[in-house]
Each structure stands twice: as structure tokens, then as C-alpha cells.
Length: 255
Image (cartoon, rainbow, N blue to C red; front, side):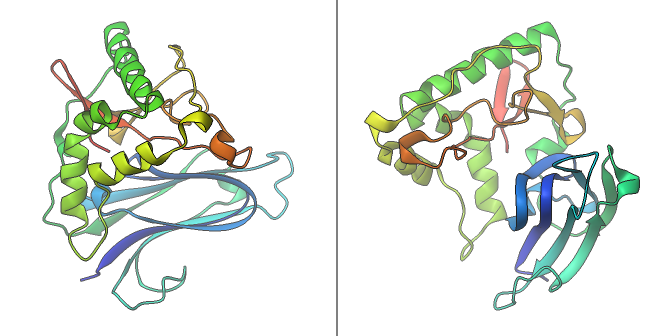
């Protein structure tokens, strides 16, 4: 059994978004050649899974040498984590015939984990649900703006618990303490966050309708900093992905 299950993306000259079981695990836009590696055990279920690749060249009318490949592969400690190495579970490649639509593949995987999002109720983005999401997002952005990790960590309790299960020692799990330290370490005078503005174009359903991705119409997380904050490069920002389930009156961050 592999020690690490990774999504690997190889992209040249455009945009690519990769989803595992309809949950976005990476979105990259770059005019150069880039290789992206993301661990994905918290997105995998026991049995049948799906991998999807949404991709487009920078200039759709002139794709040139645009290319995009994504795969799921397993590695053991000590392996070289190259695109052509490891145990491959699924492999996708963009072609001009697929322009304007995603390519997908099903694959089998065995795991003992059962995640909250698997059985979360399906969501309809009604006016009432949108109002609740607006209020929740505003609270998260206010806390982020104040560099106050408390409300965010409270909302992410399920997320942290499941991440800890997905990445047991010696793998590194993302923890509430680490997030709090990172947030508080930012320079207060240079801290600048985006303004949250409710819009009918906000939010998208993912995980086959069981989760809401708190993103704007550009598919960038609504909670985050303005580009170039604290002396960062002009196109760099700290964006906080929040994928939520809705159970009764609760909005729960699960990914």
C-alpha cells in the first residue's frame, strides 16, 4: 500500500483545475511550464472515485503548444515523486477535441476512511441558503481581516479532525495551531484583505452538490488577502479555501 496518494498536474500555457470526486483540489493559471503536486487522501472514498480535468489555453483561439495532464498516483517513502513514477490510478490529458469541456476518468481505491462530506445532504442554492452563506462568509472574512483565528478554527473543527485522520504521523497534518500561528505572524501594518460583497454570482456547488465552494465568479476563494499584500508579488495572495456542508442550521467547513 502506498504511503502517499498524490494528484500531479503538468501544465503549459494556460489554466487547469483538477477535481477529485467533484471537489477542486488545485487550480493553476500559468503561461510557463509548471508541475504541481497535491496530496489527496482526504478527497478519496472507498471504491469508485472520479478524476476530472478542466483546462483551457491562455488564448483559446490559438492553443499553440498548450498542454495539460493530471493523474492520481501512489508513492512509498523514498520514491522519486516524478510524473512518470509511482503506482498510477488515473491519468487524464487535455486535447483539442475536449476543448470547452472537462475530461474525466473513474478509478478504484481502497480506504478505511469515511468522510463527513460523503453523506452530507444535497444543497440547493436558494435565496435562504445564499443569505446564510453570505452571513457565514462575512464572519469568516471579518475574522481573517482582524487576524483572529478563533472563529475560523471553530468553523473548521470537522476539517481539522478529518485532516488529522488523513495524514497520520509521520505525515504532516494542517492544524488549528499552525493556522493561528501563521495568521498572527503577519505584519499588521501591511495586512490587507479583500472586501466581501454578496453577489448572485458567488458560490458554486461541488462534491456532486453536497458542498458549497465559497468562491467568487472568478473561482477564487472569497476569504483572503488582496494581491501583493505585505510586500508579496503583485499577483500573489493568501486565499483561504472553504468548502462547506449545510446540516440543519449549521454551516460546516469540511474541506
